[in-house]
Image 1 (cartoon, rainbow, N blue to C red):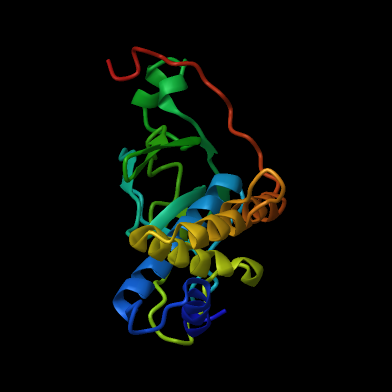
Image 2: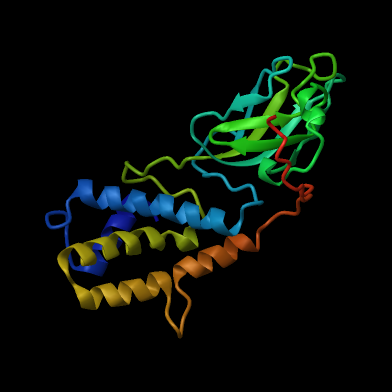
Length: 235
């Protein structure tokens, strides 16, 4: 379904038209549900590399590393971090293991000395490498690579198509229709639309079906090592 199809479906579901549900409102609501649908995908497949199929470039970014610098900002538009790699001195890429410093129980000296990064953590909009890179042990020029998911491209042209599986595109028109029903107090239509979208005791809605579908497409991954919290980490 492209944007024109989605808008026509909203009109069908609500009994409205372009005069009673104007373009600015319907497109804003469709795109709000577009981002909500992508969030649902990530809730179910946090280890599977999803990316908006409308993007023309791969969800990979590289940057330089600096000697003894552990903190690197994520690029704008990054929605979820999938994998972090570092290039060793021989020019070969290797993957870092994710950790959570709130669960770290390791001698603080390990992080105080630069070396070959083995782990990474996310803090705000930054990646923290542990240990900080040593220019004698890694390739600093374009030596840090991240695999990311980016924010969706908003649907604005009538031929624009959502960047996830087409069998779930109707989530966007159902959502925009639900917004209209809530705003204008149409309780009867709201109940039926909410049932199709969220399900009830007798049937699964599209939201649950979406999560099941993408959850089953989860790729295999090596799980990171779990650490316990070390209160002396920053002492």
